[in-house]
Image (cartoon, rainbow, N blue to C red; front, top):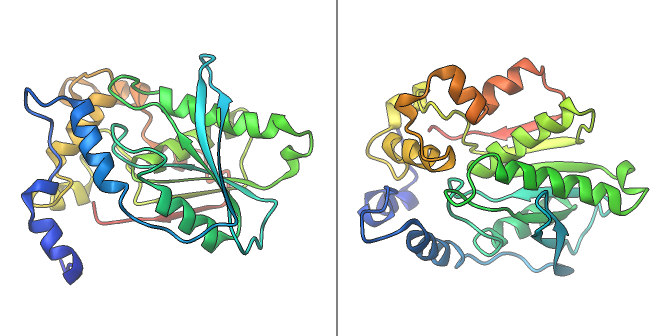
Length: 256
């Protein structure tokens, strides 16, 4: 497989390989370090960036960051964006540059969601918070329901966005579009690309199993039957196929 020269050094650096933290390092400590590294990227200037919140399903506030692009070709539209980070890492700051770029290139306002993270808040906490954000945005203004609203996310955020869109479609609350970037799809980690590229890269098969393990109440994937995996953490790919594309969608895939 040909790798872009810019990534050779990154892939060869063992410090970036994800793995379950060994004691005494804890998940929150690893998260703090990872988030600090990811938050260093800079994005384009916006017309405005506003921090706000909506009420979550448990009555607690969900932090949001709203990006209004300078050239708002689709100023009325909204993109609810769920950041990546393996369900365990990530924040509004780590994906600030990506949210800015999404707003700039789409011409729509981006609403980034600071959803709760595993293992403290395992599935379906993040999905439920994404759903709460969509429904709150639509409920704030009687005219908001007519405003085009899309769901987007990268990596684990792609899974959250897609599962949220499917749940909304099942409740007859379909969103206008879904865009997922290199999404995490299957909790089983047994795809062809995972078998081919599951070793020797930053995201190994073992690391992905650990990530899903942390998001499914710490139960080992090997001990979960396929039907139980589907119940515990729906496989977005198979669910999407069964629903026969209920919304216009874009997926940017990577060989993982």
